[in-house]
Length: 350
Image (cartoon, helix red, strand yellow):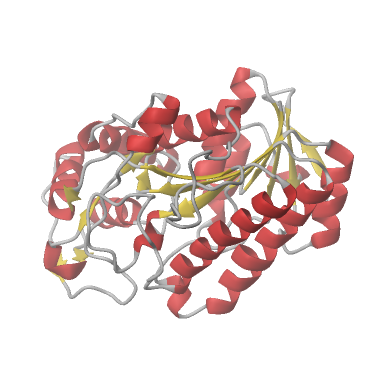
């Protein structure tokens, strides 16, 4: 297939491009390479995939030196003309939208960036898909959409109308907009609610990266909710495997769907939503212990109150993923943390 991956310099996007290019798909990656976090990591990811930083210019297609079937373009999702021209020129079979302004806490102080990227940019992609006969529209949602929900494990068949951050609200809006385009124009859309993704080449603003940097520098770490947070930590390779399976199987209408008892996770249109998580909830203190084991150190901890926008616990019900794709993530936290530390030491030479 010819596949467009947005957010190709990002954590998940980079890994997905590697996987798709390795198996022989014709891949075009786009990213605006913004400065939300350390751009060295973004350019490092691209360089690993054969995209030289020195060759990157806005709107210019750069051929990978590693994969003959991978090309990269620096482009903003908000650039409607640029997105439209790219779709018209390339005639994509499928799209995986992983580009977004990420981060719950950042959304408390920089709300406008979430509207421009996650709302305006998303509509631009939907419009391009509509006018260019795209066969499969896959996009990143988030476990954050579950918000105030307390019934666990979180199910895609539960209502998610009570987000607690603008980031979560923007992801929920993506699901609603995608459904509209599936219903009106028959575009197969699949939303993927990722649960706390971690692993090599991860985001520097996330806990594992911050904890590792502090530990290696001999500094204490901030542990919110007094260490009582629980997360469904999901290793990056497991996330990518789920994404690839969805890209290979566009959403289908649910013939049993009823407007009298509407199921939020499916539709009479070709629309689906899936959780991709490890199907286990892990105490944050156990996650930190796995990091201590990998580093061979004891980390000093500052126990602090929960922060606005955070939820105390996440846990993914992945029964639909198993039923429809015969797949569920399996990597253990200790195994995943060990792999991250091996990468971190090599990349930062520490």
